[in-house]
Length: 500
Image (cartoon, rainbow, N blue to C red; front, side):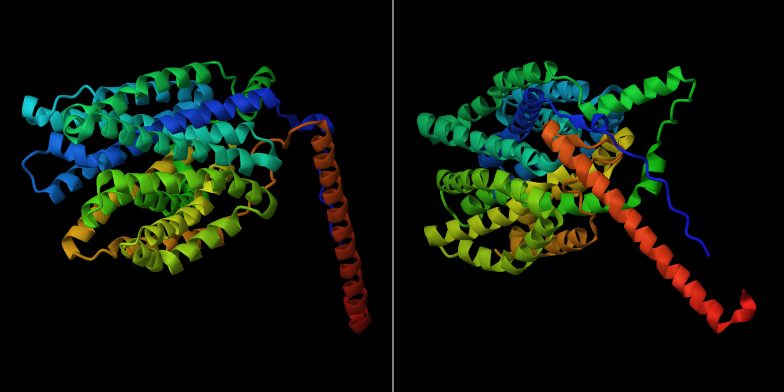
């Protein structure tokens, strides 16, 4: 009996991609700014939902106005999977940079247009229809925005720092939320509640225009990611060698061959984004409408919570590079399940300090998810289908998560139970826990289908040494197996001489 040694392809220092630090910083800034632009709108929309309900749905009961405004927020998630399919296919064919430049244009224009829509009193039913059309355009563009930005950062990042650098993407989303909320509070306090309902609510949407121009400039100036460029160069090299170009991967093939990472991705996105929308989009309305705090009071509490999240976010990403992504998903899920009800007890205590503490605990648990999501999801799929597969899984999941504000508001109204959002989070926590248990660890490893990436030559030499050490260890393991099998063979022959 013989065990054949598997031939291992040796790796050289030139096989390791050295990431240009200047290009890396530009890539992260451009990606994070676009994400901030997306969440600036979400933040503004969540914090002015009470005003939008009165402007676009007048005459209805205040509770119905709130549900209608939040439903308009949720409906665009229906078209996000379509946007994901469209931009995902383009991103895998033409590159990440080109698609991200297009999505930020659509997003900034549609957000700006919301501020131009007349109210129901002026144009009747066309007011909510135009609002919905603008939100649908946003949803379509956002279908390719977050996944593209996450892939862009992941493909630009060194393997050992992908968690830390990826965490800045959601740092941008939190910063966008804070900016949106801060602008709402500032404008409301300057113009007064009456003027804010009449015209002041439009100003935050107009700010999307200059933010969008900055984002377009930064993204247009970027180069394609090193990982995707290697993929393109390989295809060009194969075509010059008369090797047929790899066949295009269909949607059906992605579902059948990548079903496991797709399910893991769906579970992680649902756990993360339901918690995200519950805390940062629904809670301002919950505090003002259900707990009867003034709008400004509730907004200020959420802003303070988000400022704290900004400091925690990169720290979580950095720790995930050291300890892995799985522990944070599992810890965040267990914590959410155990602490959801205690947190809502604190939030409903009518004591400012306890309300803040309850929200802060939920925020730290949310950081456990968003601190690792942008670095985890792109690592699940190979380069040639990464954008398409991730866009499909992410946007189907967000379609479910995006209904969170509407469902939570409806559950509270229908049951008159202020703890329904806590029960909702507990169900989501179980999804997150199962996801964390079954997901594969991706920290400090190259992306699928890509060569290792390092910050500099010194780190590349360390990676090369580790690679060689791993090969030596595998050879020693195989040699030990050969010795063990040979001993078993001799023992078997000694016991049964006739079989030799």
